[in-house]
Amino acid sequence: MTAFIAALIFVVLAEMGDKTQLLGMAFATRFRWQTVMWGVFVATAANHLLAAAAGSYLTLIVPLGIIKVAAAVSFIGFGLWTIRGDQLSGEDQRYQFSPFWTVTIAFFMAEMGDKTQLATISLAVEYNSVINVWMGTTLGMMISNAFGIIVGIVMGKKIPERAIKWGSALIFIAFGAVGLYENLPEPLLTPLALTVGGLALLLLVGLVAWRNNKKTVLAPVREKQDSLDRNRMKM
Image (cartoon, rainbow, N blue to C red; front, side, top):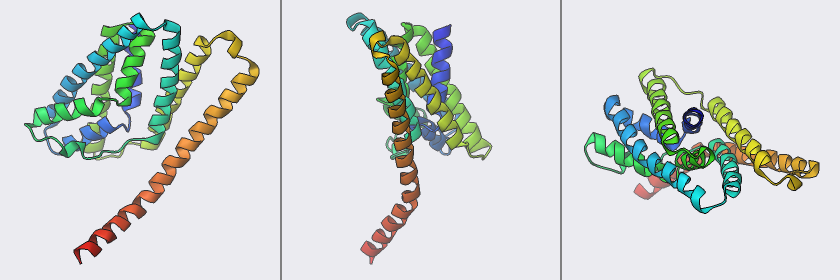
C-alpha cells in the first residue's frame, strides 16, 4: 500500500503543469471529456506497466544500492525538470485518427521519456513492486488530468501554475536529497561534503529558475519578432 500511495502522490505532483496535462487540456477543447479521460487511461496503463516492469527488472541485474542512489538523483532531476516546465510542440495536432485513438496514441507517445514515465521506473526500483506502482501512477495520471480539464476548461479558471510547480519541485528535490543521504556510503557524508552538496543544489535550482524566468520574459518578444518576419515575407 505504501508503494501505491507514494506512486499516486508523486505522479499527481509531477503532472502539474506537465506536457501531458497540457495535452489533456488541449484535447478537452476538441473532444468530449469522457473520450479524453478514456484515452489517457488506456495510454497510461500501457505505458506505465512497461515502465514499472523495466524498473523491477533493473533490480535483478544492477546492485540495489547503486540503483537507489541513481533513483534519488533522478528525483532531484524531476524537481529541476518541473521548475523548468513543459510546453506543447504540436502533439495535439500530430495524429489524425478517431478521437479516442488520437488521444490514446498522442498520450502514449508523449509519455515516452517524460518525467512521469521515468518516475514510474524509479518508484518501481525504490519499492520493488510492479503492480502497486503501476496502479498508483496510472490513478495519479487520471487525477491530475481530470484536475487540469475541470479547472482549466470546464470551470474556466487558471491553474496557479507557479505555486503548484514550485511545491511539486521542492517535494521531488527533498525526496531525492533524503534518498542520497540514506544510500550514499557513510564516509562520503562528511560535514564539508554535505555543505558543498547543499550549496551546489541550491545554486542549480536558482540557475534553472533563472533560465526559466528569462525564457518566459523573452517569449512574447520572440513571438512578436516571428510575426513581423512572417509579415515581411508575405510582402
